[in-house]
Image (tube, rainbow, N blue to C red; front, side):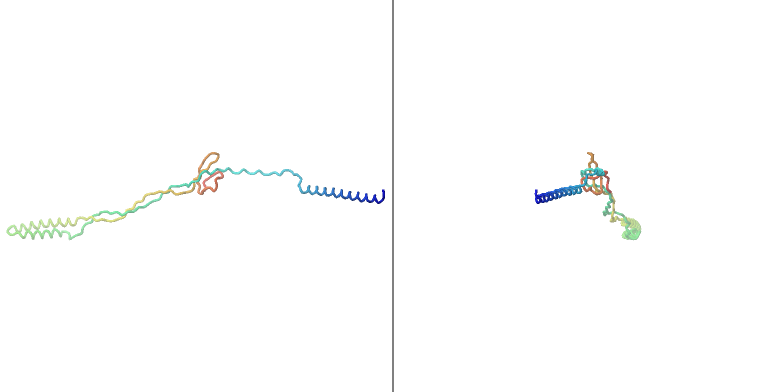
Length: 195
């Protein structure tokens, strides 16, 4: 084998060796890179258990809640009353005096012996009649007085005060009165009136 051929074979062999070493190095670098890219398997991490969510009730119905409130009502109306007042007409005893004078004058119209008797009788009868007329005139007179009478009674009315919330839990239906209605179709337990 000539020296020239040996040199050529040596160059080819060296090139092949370099190519093999390069390929092996590339494969080794890629394997190392993949090892660093994927972490090695480790022990499982303990996860804290989630606390159970509170039980909820299903809202069945929401209706206004009414209460009855009482309040006083005052009613006033006009009325008329009849009262009797003394009549202050004339001077006391004036009827008897005027009647006596009139009766005496009437008796004086009679002539003769009976004239004096007639005057006395006329005066007496006139005085009695005049007194009776004056007493009749002085009788209490009915007078109508207007006034106002008032009465007070108690009335009542229904006023809305909150909401009646019907809910169901575990097949049992219950109701609670709340000042505000629930905001969703479920409510967390325990349920109490929200004052």
